[in-house]
Length: 95
Image 1 (cartoon, helix red, strand yellow):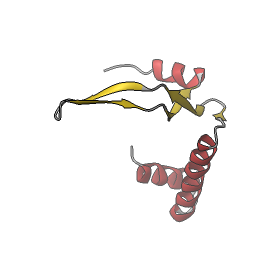
Image 2 (cartoon, rainbow, N blue to C red; image 1 turned 90 degrees about the vertical axis):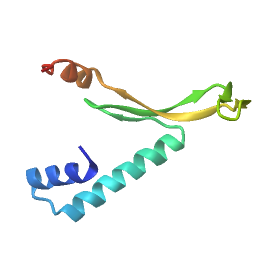
Image 3 (cartoon, rainbow, N blue to C red; image 1 turned 60 degrees about the horizontal axis):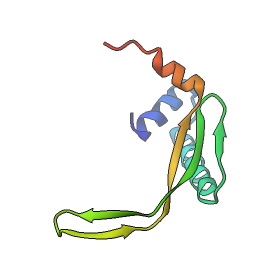
């Protein structure tokens, strides 16, 4: 499912114009990114938490050029689903 599919689904279920749904979704994404960028956690009950995680410095290799270098420590975004979300996904029947 793509962002356009989500916009269409929300429009179909609520009747909110697609342009308004797009603005709401983009604002939501922007706020989540900004909050995580600032080092805070965004928790959505029943869905999960967005946060950042520190990755330690480590040696890396460029196999093509046969060189090595140290990849500096850095932060990466992280999503942790809630228990309700995990249980809902586990309950899906595999075909």
